[in-house]
Length: 62
Image 1 (cartoon, rainbow, N blue to C red):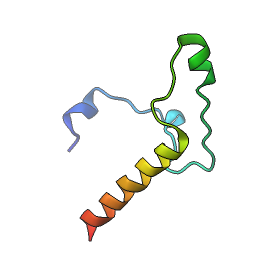
Image 2 (image 1 turned 90 degrees about the vertical axis):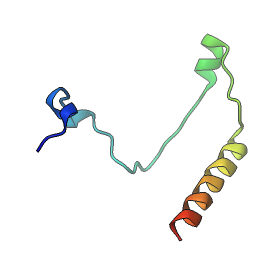
Image 3 (image 1 turned 60 degrees about the vertical axis):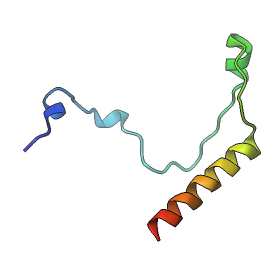
């Protein structure tokens, strides 16, 4: 049986992103130049946040 939302949503497989991509690259300079936006964390802080989240997840799973 289909879920209620499936009656209204059509998924186009052309726009489905693979779960794992080989290469991701981000550059916030365009957002900074056009909007004055600056990231709140630097690259190393982001990595630490990701590691911490992974370790929390591992602890919950064991």
